[in-house]
Length: 239
Image (cartoon, rainbow, N blue to C red; front, side):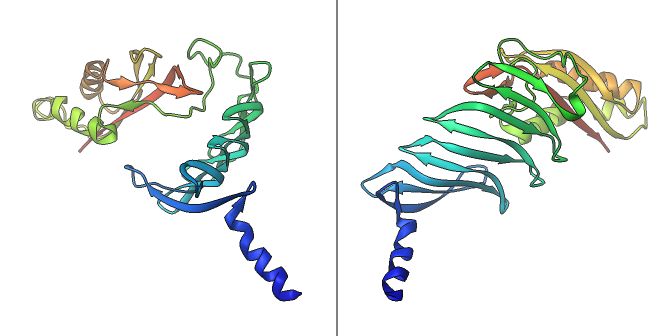
């Protein structure tokens, strides 16, 4: 009897929702790795548990049913703190979704039945975060972050090409890191461009000038397939 029970237990990971499945490990272009299961009769249909890892760290975990997200899903910050949690049904978010900062503090809750966003914890007294339009106005969490042409390498190449380092070194010897803040709208345009942390008026003004040149080269953030406005910060490292 013990041998029979042991064999049955071994067979459980290969049968999900009554279907025979196989495990898939898929490396993505950004070097992150997906681990999931697909139906043996149709390897395009995800069935069962799903994990996304980056640099060996778990970033997303959940479950698929007939190729659609289903049940509870968890999303993590790069420091492994929880970023978001909630439930899916037939590929759509349902009920209450909770969002956290990288200190594991609950900061927002979105009710998908009532389409209501509430601020929690450190944001409890923030009545207006002042970003965006539509039903996801002021939501800090996004499924897809804002991206510049060719990603972070594109930002670095663009700033190096356009920032007039050699000319300005004749006027100032200041060094350090400048952070330029802006709001990236749903249409990809930048507004409210300003210095968040500066080091010198001459270099700060140049960082503002270069940031304005980046207008129209951004893809906006997205949530639930909808483009949303997002506050961004662009670093300039002056050495």
